[in-house]
Image (cartoon, rainbow, N blue to C red; front, side, top):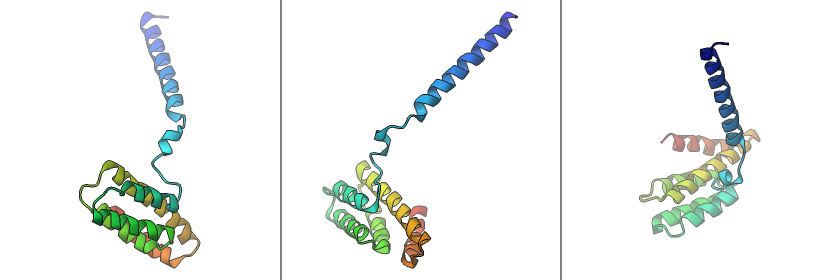
Length: 134
């Protein structure tokens, strides 16, 4: 075997080994990755209220309204309130993450409700899609 061929083989094997190692490390699931995403709208409501507890009066009121609507499954009001919360000024990183997590949880709930034939959920889902486009 020529030295150049041996070098290429070693380079290939080294790259393959590195790829495998990185793949194994990257594919391991850690519970820390799911910390910020609520599992359901009720959990999202609590996270939203907590994140906006020290916010301005307008932001806190809108967040409380969204949280109450989520708990009562008033989907359309929840979407409108989330739009208000999202448009408030000086939103912190934690608040922005709470809004994002709430939208993710609400979207999952709406998709399930739409599949079950809930016409109000379908209307709220259309509103949510419009909110996400902004």
